[in-house]
Amino acid sequence: MEMKVIEHATCTFCGCVCDDIELHADETRIHQAKRACVLGKAWFLNHTAEHKYPDALIDGRPATVDEAIEAAADHLYNADMPLVYGMSNTTCEAQKECVEMADLLCGLVDSHTSL
Amino acid sequence: MGGKVTCTLGEVKNRADFIVYWGGNPAECHPRHFTKYTLMQKSKFLPRGRKDRTVVMVDIRETKSVKAADIFLQVRPGKDFELMTILRAMVKDQEVSDEQIAETGLTREQLTDLIARMKGARFGVMFFGMGLSMTRGKHMNSAALLTLAAEMNAFTKFVAMPMRGHGNVTGADVIMRWQTGYPFGISFNRGYPRYNPGEFSTVDVLVRGDTDCAFIIGADPGATMPQPAIDHLAKIPTIVLDPHVTHTSRLARVHITTAPAGIAAPGTGYRMDEIPMPLRPALESPYPSDEEVVRRIKEAIAAKPDWMGQQPQMLLSQI
Image 1: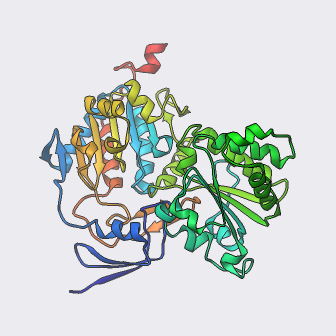
Image 2: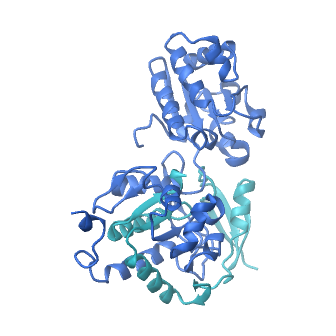
Image 3: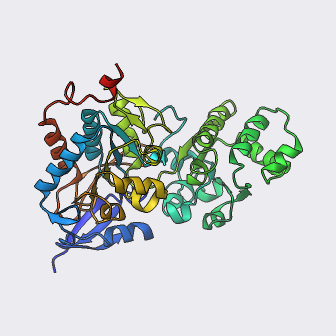
């Protein structure tokens, strides 16, 4: 099978954020993560592009992303004191959206740092 | 840099000849920290690599990292703040009694030797981990260590850096500081950002039951937080964005599966020394990215009528 090679890939498992990883991947999974440590290898090799989970769940039942987005917006809009929390395993671009959303909601925003 | 006396890991790699790890276990939690930045690298200023560097490990137990260190100081659990305060005094030749030193589990000889080495260093760096910042004293411990590093600059170049874990948690601090002026524990409920950890920090807010809706992204509090906080999350509508169906997803009202950042979603992540790194995803996910989903939720909320004046919240009901 044809393997795609990604050089200088970035590992976001721990705070070191090593950016010298060489990934060998096919369509669905990463087969090799050169120069990555034990934790990094596990991180890259355990995530796949398979459709393993339902797109979304509402009250435990499978739903579409559109329905879930609408439900999430309703819950957040109807709350008096919504909380936006986490933002560790995500990108800065998503974090910026989160802060903006908390601002719009007049809510709380917090990360792992406060634990 | 949020006021810290710090530097980048590149400077550590090229210049640091005296390295302290306090309450951290890099051998197991940041496996490439030693080899890429602190121990093994040779440079113009440290041509003999490991031989030119002194490594001190301060911890309450002998972790795997201790094997790599030249000096191991075993501090009594919960006495880190006391030890740092004593060091700050001894650095300035102030008197410290034997009883006070004995309380930390160390001897006067060990501390005198440590201070002589610290003052003799050309470039000292102190890395501190969760063993310091998440135990008794918490952020006061971090503050004491950062102050010690700052005060050491009266004698030689000295810096400090937190050993951040959890991928892009540094990025969260940076983004919140950029957008609001504060790093975490922020409330917008008066329409402008206010910062008060203890009042607006998540565990406290959940345990007191102050929040009536939670939006969780890139975290799994259902697996890590104290039980009363988890109970409250199960009681209120909780929304989870995660690449997996997590513990938190199971008690949430809404879960949306997203592409894992850095593996199937592009973007930026911050290294622990606050250097932004571009992510280079290797896979194409069938799921949307966090950024896309959060933006769409935000837009759906913005499309609803403004609540001001219709649903009196904290601000209006207080007037």
